[in-house]
Image 1 (cartoon, one colour):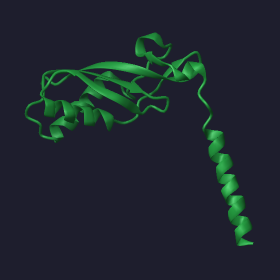
Image 2: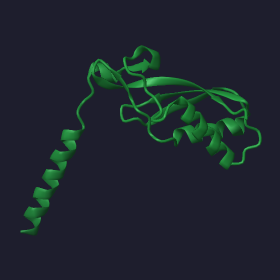
Image 3: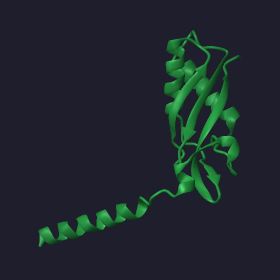
Image 4: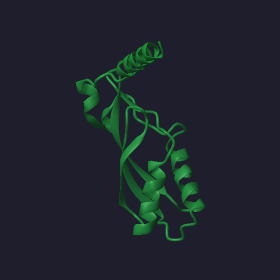
Length: 131
């Protein structure tokens, strides 16, 4: 009896997972530039709050060699998570690594939308560390 219950439970869980992992359509497979989508990907409280989040997190790490401005690029996924973070310019190697790590660990963003679908979008940001 326990084996039957276990088997039924396993099948139920398998069906549940398969229903939530729908394949992506052609619109969702593409990585868009944030400027070419109908609804831009954005940090929950706006770009200014994202800048404040990164600045505060970097200050908590007590980095002394952080730059005045950093250009960063990343992809906001369909679920709002960040991936493929790149630091384009600004700062020394250690500071750039720390900034990249902070961005990778940021709270989820609101994903971009295009033609009624959530899509992946590349976002470019300029982070200002001047006080």
